[in-house]
Length: 246
Image (spheres, rainbow, N blue to C red):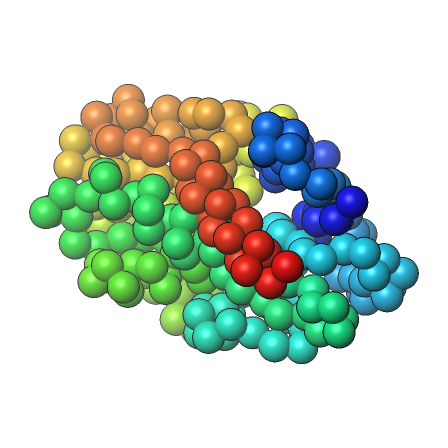
């Protein structure tokens, strides 16, 4: 039995375990997939050292950036993005990091893009936001970040963001965990009154299917999408990477 798994924190809700377990069963593959819930990223090395039968990992919040120092090598794309969500473990024990979030995001957002979608706001500055930024650059869509606190390269804080600002950015992407089940009554604190029928709101969250962020945008006439299709695409890309190394 070949073992694969997910690195993260408080990940009992995880999409990945259910998805890959069902996939392996349907395809009659001799693979297992499990969650490795780490209280701190320092627990990762002992996990790898003690389990030499694990040949690959996915990585989720909050470790997509923190995992990098523990890896032996980065794929060129992951290196450019500065975040990792997929790892291969070679028979030599060497760990290589990849980013398939960018692929999943691009594939999932493209069907929603219209000619007027020229500028985007990325809510949040964590590891997931880096893959979003990389993809928007590839799509030639200008973007700015919104963060709780002032930071280099961050144009807006939630306090400084105005209705007029929202009107200028007709794609708004939530890369924060705000609104994830069970905290379904939370959402990013932005001026939703500025959202119009010309807007596209995209939430990386997939549980619930329609977050408060998306519901509020929908009520203003915006097109909306959750992160479920992104997860499917990034998972299948990770599967192809693992298969190529087996």
